[in-house]
Length: 290
Image (cartoon, rainbow, N blue to C red; front, side, top):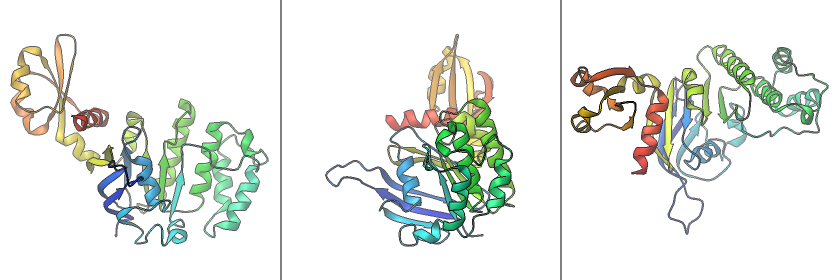
């Protein structure tokens, strides 16, 4: 299968007089069946990358979505791609039934029956105005609408920001149901600050720092390439020779983030633990600041 998204050497500079680039030489691919975590602190370039994929701004480099150029072929791209932002973009004055009817008129691939079946699993009444819905309900409605378009690529930008645990759990459960129903042909990009919350969903990760890619890898490779060593302070000089990505003090010990090539060498120095994505994410952010 061809990649659903191809990005090569993507760059974006908003102001010509400023030397700072919002994105610089970012490259990655999104294959069918992948769930990509797009990670980075505020200002890392996540939103600029998403807007480039949506064809909402001009950029340098190559971007292809389903072999289409997002700006030139915008209408065609949006038949394959759907986007849920971190803010409500649905018209508050419409009722739920009216927005479903509107979607039928503007999107030939929209399945109203699917949308109603999905909403039947929630507490959302079709006669309710969107403005009267809670934030959690608005997110559920938006997700139901984009799922009903039968798109192949779904981009989520901080989708659960401000939601309580119950709504977050429901959101991700419905998301995975939709993804698995695609028989390996669908893909998702999730941009989020909540690394621990989405790690179990991901197959791949793209980490941005100050507009640059500092990691583009499968999640499996991340957990195989690094480990945590909890060792006494007396071994610090020895461990420093192994160029740890990060370290933090504990109660009489230090926790070191090391590359897996050193695991056998340090087994006798302390306790070894599996690494989490959040560990590597934070370490790479701090390393890029040096």
